[in-house]
Length: 216
Length: 216
DNA sequence: ACCAAGTTTGACCATCCAGTCAAGAAGCAA
DNA sequence: TTGCTTCTTGACTGGATGGTCAAACTTGGT
Image 1: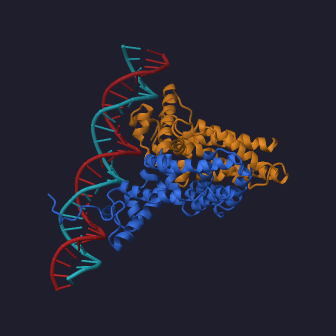
Image 2: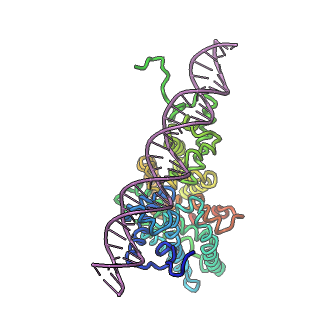
Image 3: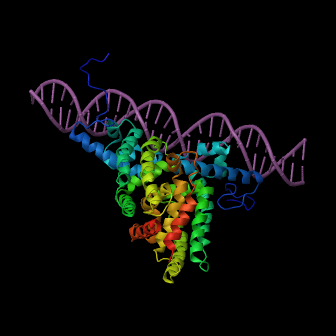
């Protein structure tokens, strides 16, 4: 029987708990960054703990000292990202100017694709495999947020302030177009040549597209 | 030294050779179909030969009687698909009506996403991993075709028959929007509810979008 | 019926890989 | 320095998985 003086037999800084030491903070951060690199490039099954550990500059058992399992690393990574993922859409303001709001949303998503392509590919990988680990998030938080903003967009349409378009498809189209530049960057680079940035000209094109489509 | 009477020590119907018997034809077809199912859902690393064999109704060594390796199955699958993949864009006719041609191309791609979602996810998986097995195809055949059609679209723009837009981004946008309905179907289903077909309303939305954007 | 080629399989091997463990090496407070 | 806690690692285990092989079983032509 454990005596009261026994320390909790937990992994250091396990799920959500604040890291206790400087070393922990540093190593957990390194691991998550390495995991993002590896998982986004190879998918969950395609990644190995060894790869992640090496990328993080640690040994495999050392990595497993900080996270219980490969799955635990992946979960920690995802839950750290889910909130940021909602941020751009949350920002869409029902009281703002419809065109401006939608175009700003598109631009924020496009900027995220440029700044966080690994995160985008991580999500894409998950959803391609049928989203088993994201079911809960998508069907609750994301769905609620999308439905809320879709209502706003539908109202703007009924009021004649933008063209009447299916608001869900409008949101999906923004996801498709902006994430394409992160998820399919390899293809774009091979077609346009490595000397171009895949996103060159993308913002101008998408501005034109949404301005035209949304004009009342 | 091999005598002239020796049969070639090859796998039956290996790469490109026509299958010799009915059994071969049937089993190779079953294997490729099963492989498409498994690879598109789990990626290359995530798929196992056992899974593919079971899905095809064969034993693992039996599958390996028809294909040398997991890699060989994957290659055969890809090369069988590459041609079909180019077909819709090839079809875009420089002598036709610009709006009609581009809208038809979009509709053909959308139809392919509905009819062949597994193929679409297989490609998406490949490109997400950095397209190592598609480099040659993309940077030669696909690139040439895209550049050729981009010139046609650019000319249409200069002639004032459609709006002047970056033709490469126009093509990418069609890929992004149409393939999204296959590759991210899981996400769309979770957001709209399983009772909707993910593509419901997509064609109307995309018609609106491209009609508006391309109007001169 | 007979035979040669084509097909199928159980048993097996080698490697990879997630995860364990016990022992040793820092860190750190007194 | 001492003693306790936190980190780190080499060596290991067990199971999964890609691939082999020789022996069997089918098939189809004669």
